[in-house]
Image (cartoon, rainbow, N blue to C red; front, side):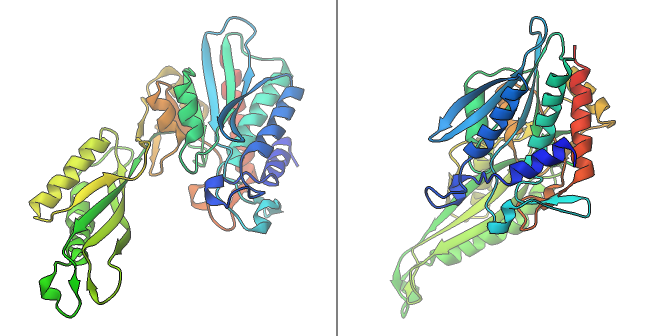
Length: 375
């Protein structure tokens, strides 16, 4: 068993479920156990350790390897520490057929293990860069509201490149979609179910809204394409209206998931959908659900450090992914960001999450080579 594999197994055995998905004070909730374990290990390796308090009992873990001389650039390794929930066996790491199974194996404790191991190995080798500061930040709350990355960005943290840990199968990702959650409401007139002609059915009005969103509007989105991300999308996820069968419903609400492309804004999407519904003569009101924007990411692959990282990954051109992550939050704060890590996104959040151990080692080795190459 390699050191990186051993570390990942230890991390899986330390539950760090986002408290948003658990009852209050649940024993598996929060990132503290995992952060404390990593902090102690980092201190033993001679690394500088600090905590950035974000929420009660929850803090970003910041670990630094200082250069031998004056800092001229900073590279940030930024995986998240929290996971979604799991049953009782999900926190027992199991090795089978070259895979390590367990909650967080690929999303993103695999990235944590690879990035942390590369940093510790570099620190212990005494071959630290001369002028490049290396920072590992274990972020909290990515799976819910990205409280960790948003607080880090708001603190004024600066870096010349952030490598955000997510399962990308060791591919360097420079673009991802944004995500807007919207509510659309239709209003009607209540009446007795025996005389529906005296009322105005809000559910019927909403049925027409749903149909046009899922057909005509979705088709319009497919006509706008991004070279790495393809098209934006819309999905009607929930619907609620009426109180009982014998009352004409006077109110209906749907929630939709709108995946956005670089260049699209929240205000622009609001205007677009409102205008579309007006064109179809479908009166409805729109409001945002998420308090903090989930912006799309687009990082210039021609930036020197991004080009260098692509070469380290032996990758001719960057890739894009459909999902949103902390990279866009850091990028919006002025930190050029890419996404990279071992594992496949198809395994994330599944009941039997796993990662290929060979890929885990490759990720650590690739990161180590890239960090060693820095001035």
